Length: 252
Ligand code: PTJ
Image 1: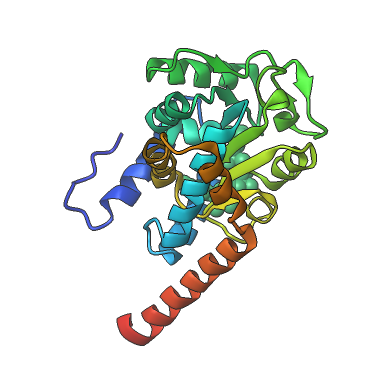
Image 2 (image 1 turned 90 degrees about the vertical axis):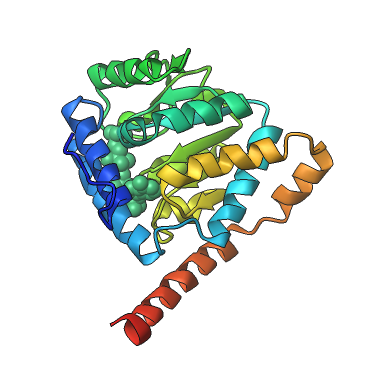
């Protein structure tokens, strides 16, 4: 990995980029994952490269939904495996949601590499190898484990292409997505859309879950019921507008 000086003004962004490139070199991340990361970076820039208040709210609601879930699961792809293995394992342990590798560009080789990578980072059990059930999708993401995504009631899908999200919602599952693009089909169809970078969002959900661990079911259900996903997406677009206005009026 290229050494990034800590005093570089874009240190964290460059470090994240290095991690994704390293993921490609390790055969974990797809080449297409690099393009996805670039698109995400652009939206992150427009959102101020921070967890905005609306995203913090979504992360709290996501945490409540995961605590309430009977059979939650966290889906892992080539980008999240490279960027946030430790954070996914931490969240998995806190809310009792197993990890399942589920890939758009699915090959057995990459599934196994990602499973081993997660285990090297401390995961004890990772689903996804079996692939004994099918979602009604014509690409690799349709292949899932019967005891994982297929039978889960709440699915966390960080960084996604839209049609699986829609399929899971149509199957009656609650879907929590993390996508920096508030206009994506994923963000528009999810039950809870977290418009934040995965490098910040997973810890946001995990920390909120720890804070709410003593809440009773009624309190958690009230929080989940009060959530309005469309309003959240509108707030994220307003934040982008506001940032652009600020840039044009005060920064240039
Ligand atoms: O590993 P695979 O084979 O499952 O493939 C994974 C990718 C990401 C290549 C695949 O799912 C894909 O092509 O995704 P898309 O359609 O490019 O969508 C990715 C979305 O994630 C885009 O809306 C990006 O803005 C967003 N995104 C990218 N990086 C981040 C992100 N959102 C949050 N955090 C990021 N770091």
